[in-house]
Length: 404
Length: 134
Ligand SMILES: Cc1ncc(COP(=O)(O)O)c(C=O)c1O
Ligand SMILES: [Zn+2]
Image (cartoon, rainbow over all chains, first blue to last red):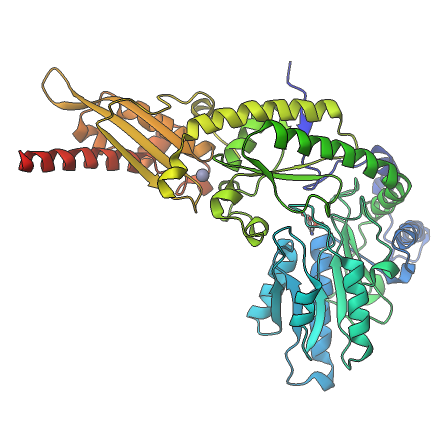
């Protein structure tokens, strides 16, 4: 009999909730119309898209007209950042000025690489703020990075690797004050992809102008997401084509996925507080057991300012890919920041930004819980982990000592 | 990670794993930065023809599945070979015996034969040195 599989990689992606799937199903071949069509088929689809938009607006406490559907958080982040820069260059008053972007060094690669490509093209100057050892961005560092030409600050709400929660609302307030006596208002963007499941995402409270989210991290489908764009925020579209999404995002709507995104957010809103409490308890239990029962184990990132479902450990004298592989052979799915598990052969930029040495980053393991994770699963995983780490440590001997 | 059956077998059941007592030579390759470190132990003896051969091998590896599997396979391949034969084992030979490795694993994690050659050379150098001294 095949082993029962245990999935603890919910930060990578989540299964589509059955109720979400049910909501989506009619929009594949029954109500298949193109929302841009005028006839009844189009109207049916258009109605579904608008209903989803309303649900999303309720979740974020914004107006439906402030939501743009995209293909996911990657596109949302690209649109937010490149769109703001592109707009900047269309304004005559900015002639001869290069805008400054302020972000941090633990962003998801889709934000980092967007910034890097703008830098490379000579379109923007970028400041990458390092977090403190706990993985938290300090407002004083943002304050110090602001100059006259600062166009946008982009700080993620929750880090996808170590689960640390950034003080978005506080940064929002700070920028609001800052903006009060500035000619050029600084835009504030946050990538909330990993926050939506558990945290308050009221855009008023957060004080953001732009917010990105993704469907597949919240028990919705892959390939769909949205960008909240506060009314009056100046953006230029980055994809040309039809007039969809008020000309901000060309391309025929992915209707079933958009319907799924709406349904997924509706469910998160209803169930989030209960799931957050349960998940956090289980996660704390996981952390406590690992740190107590596995020698030379450490938690990466702040223990307190942390999303309820994330645990990120490192273990001395163990390499993460071997660890991941051993767990995978037991049917347990997790992830690691080790170079050996990445195509780039570089360890996680997030762990290095915390000040960890390469060999420490190599020995890291991320376990992210989901809404159906049980205590029994956690117990099983910790028990296996203990045996596996002991075995791998035996194999590694004390080779690291030769380098100290 | 798409590993072959052989790789998984050597990873889960590594051969010749551990230090060996009275090793004739020990060598280490890799570095903490890139993630994979291999230490190989060899014990040199003589065959019936009086040629020096690798009688016993051992390894300790801090690294990924590929690093552990290549270490294990290398120690198997080296055993019983004359020093000259063993020196001819390449990283590519090891990978071939394992039924291949994913392309991203072909450099950093594939150092086992380098470690073996380093250990043999070290052994030979020591011997040379001792000869001169005596
Ligand atoms: C923080 C963060 N931002 C962006 C993304 C990318 O999202 P998507 O897969 O929807 O493009 C992810 C997921 O990998 C993420 O965790
Ligand atoms: Zn490796």
